[in-house]
Length: 335
Image (cartoon, rainbow, N blue to C red; front, side, top):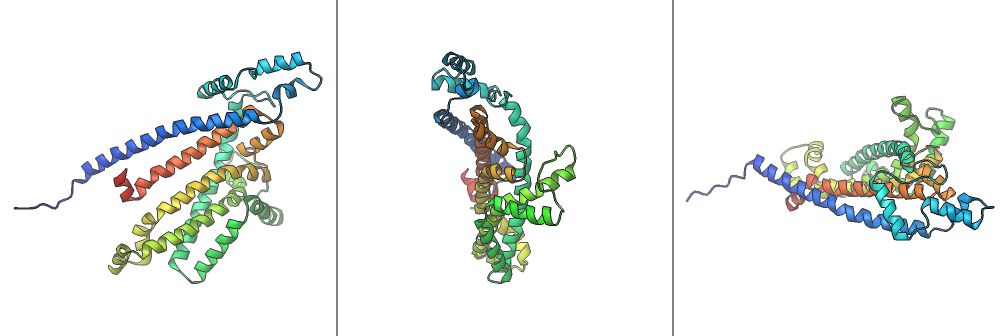
């Protein structure tokens, strides 16, 4: 009897696997919806418990109880907590985050104006972090125990211990005040001048990229050394391929899972770091708006910012989960 060992045809296998991965991605997206609803309930309840009465503050110190009640009714603060939450969620689903108590502007307009600034800062900082982290991790993994490895280990330890605002102040002192090669503060829109946009974002982006780059370098070094010690990689090297070829074709992909996980966590943390970094560099993004809203007790703006940043973190984690089957054949088969 003739036994065939031919593998299934590639187009059919790829199509079936693609449908499975799309199904898995769809389930993960649907699973994020109740998570967002639960987080929004928690955010709204915590904001409601915050001290201070917005109606009293807006009515003024000399306002009568009747005037305060009128302001409370006008703002819709006289209803029960579930009623106000449902009204707020209904408005959010229609793209209406309410009206700012401090500026009387629509919160949606304020978020739309500030969000591109913060996204630009996050994008440039992550490009810097990924580029530096990959190069440093590769350099350390290709020279284990030698001076490049020790240098990367030392620098990553220093960066992991240094907060972004401290790095930012140091960068301003060196590159803006002493050398004068980069601006210390401010932001220029990409549509106005792409070159100035990048120059104004470099220092804050480097300040935010320090910790993610250091973490990526460490994770990539450890993962690559583990992968290079496997029988599969030893057999690949025994065929005569150079270290760079082996790492480029096989090592990086097999070692990328923990690196991507770390990157996802660090991006989520970088969203929070924008609050401090935007203050240091006088950048008018979501972070600086959050600080101003806290000082003014502007609850509608704080609710919008908190929900928006939560969505950003959920999306980042979702993208990280969806990247696992692409990077790992074992996880792709299990999807």
